[in-house]
Each structure stands twice: as structure tokens, then as C-alpha cells.
Length: 163
Image 1: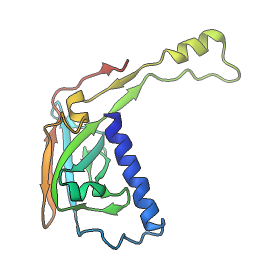
Image 2: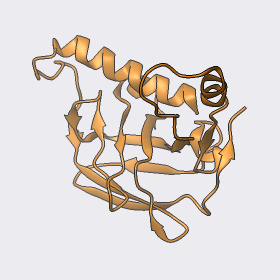
Image 3: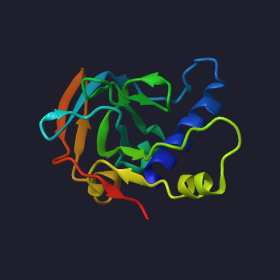
Image 4: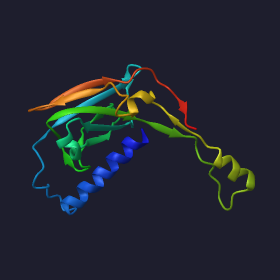
């Protein structure tokens, strides 16, 4: 789960380095296909989830794509964190969403009790953990020519405390 997110971040940073941060696409980047994906949970839009599309072909591994779902549960994936669209091929789709207990907000210095309470804040996974791993997710998509649209459902809402 966290590894998937870190992989996407690393690939995005690699993409920025390749592009020189100037918006110029890498010379060897394949054609990108526009797509919009929708995500639901318990029949409602899944808002604020991190979506990653991980290529299954070894020669396409560097072209991972992803994004964050909007208020309607939709995401328009970008490749390498900045180029609209996705390369052609087969992808595993991972989905992650977390929340953390609200931090203690105080003005001035925190008391010992407040620091201890702040340290006990918990983080929760809000999507079934199976969808967060490349090997455990059963969500897949094949991208070809033209615009792709697809809806994925991640099942019932969960709130799983992280250790």
C-alpha cells in the first residue's frame, strides 16, 4: 500500500527530472491515451482516494500513472505526475485512502498531556487493504486507442486502524 504510493511518487519525481520541469515530454514517451476513471464505495463516489495505474508489461514499468479522485469519485490519470493520459497496455489499479485523527490544536506550547494525546493519534485505512497492493488488487484495466472510461467499485466502507 504505502509502497505503491512511494513508487508513484518516485516515478513522478523521475518524470520531472527527465522533463527538466519545463513541460517537455521525454523523447521516448509513448503516445498517451486520455481516460477518466470513476470509483465508488458503498454505492457512493469515493472522494479523495489515491489511484495508481501500474503497468504490467516490464517494458512499460516507467510509465506509471495516477491521480486523486475528485468530489464525484472521478480521476483523470496523469503519467509521470504531469502528462495527461496513460500509455497503452494492461495495468493493475491500486486504490488507497486514509484519514488521521484530528491533531490537537492549541495556541502556544503544548502540555505534556496534549503531546501524549497527539502522539496517540491513529491513522485509518478507508478502503479495503486488498485494493492497495499490486499483488492483492483485483482491479485491472487495458488501455488502448481512444478515450477510456471505466467505473470501479471498492466494496463496503471500512475504517481499519494502522498499527
